[in-house]
Length: 79
View 1 (cartoon, rainbow, N blue to C red):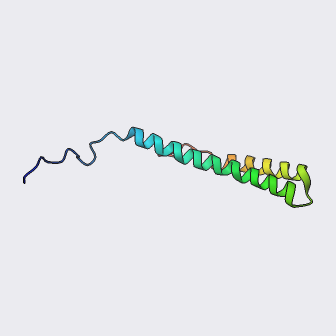
View 2 (tube, rainbow, N blue to C red):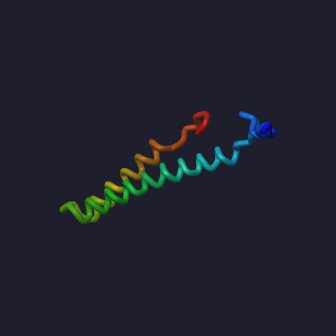
View 3 (cartoon, rainbow, N blue to C red):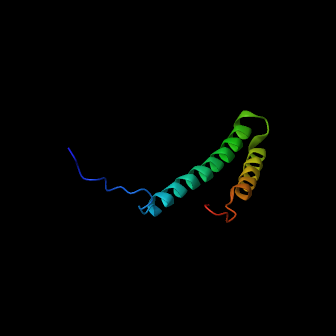
């Protein structure tokens, strides 16, 4: 039952497509989570407290702005 050796050779495969897909999923997760957090904060402050629309909108924009600054890629290797 001696079969052919496996065609797989560790480290020889081109993985550029998998790497780019991984980075796409990570970026969509990161930025999508930021947008959802800012939207959720704005809606909770608007509808569930006496703060009102303006306080919710301002708080959501502040979270969105801070998150954008903090989550940006800074050119580190691998990012």
